[in-house]
Image: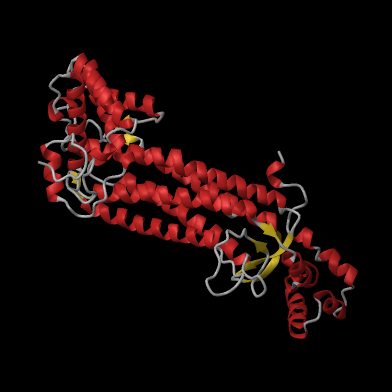
Length: 452
């Protein structure tokens, strides 16, 4: 009997063994991963029917059972712990047993987990295939849309703030003038780059180990089984999936997983940079940089009246930290790639899907509750008028050494830089002609992204 505390279990002996063997965390494998195994079972049944290896009645029963699970029924029937056998065989058998039980009960036929539901398959090719499909779906359906929304929101702000001049900073020190819109445009470009990297890294995930069965030789799988199953999965899930040409590589390593998650990690760190830049520019309200105002989400200090911390941004930074940690888990999980099988897949699966879910939620919240409500203050333009770095534009006319003397004198005396320049023989009118802040931004009022 099962030790499961809930409705009558639909699983069988293999799942019971797993429940007894792995009472580790109480955390089940992610639902999306389970559903991707179920999708493979569904497609495999149809393929086996086409190949004459499964009769029509059992095929219909298995497909109907899969559809029930995919519709959200029986969600409590997949209790196997994340920390289980490293190939996730227990999860594969859990699915086989539940699907067989549902199909047998509904049809009145004998439907067996191994002979019918798992026909032509092994956990060693099903699990890494389901893993890849889950990663692709999570990125496509959750992460990429919110990253694109963030980029669009940053571009709206880039357009809004294009007329606003400010002083750029390098090494956290004053640099030459730029447009606030250029800064936001740069952040949007960083997010766009994250999208591109994730899309490129996803190409490797589209290659499935399915058909390699136990060790990559394909023993037990009929000719054409894997290619047809991949074809059915591609059409149903709107993904371009193909059978691996080298099964011995595809099912024994986490290479493609590491590569794909590296792109997710880079996206997290890109988001962290954008969020932290905004937080820095919004420091204040009196003693900070104060060039931006971020929305007040009504999360205030417990002791300082009226203090408004940038809480939404802080949540982003913690999400990024978790993604970086998950990347370390996935990287170390590659050490479980021993001979013909990786035996740390469940940990890698949980880490990858958590990263995507966490980064998706944090990005969406950052867009909605921070970026769209950002306002520019007058601090940036005021800084431009008093900046000594305007002297950078003097160097083509009077040389670097002479321009540096004007800069040093303006800093030591506190006098306006144009006044100091006049003492060095440069009339104020001439100074502002050479050191026009708008000209120094390298851009006119026309937005570069609107030109053809």
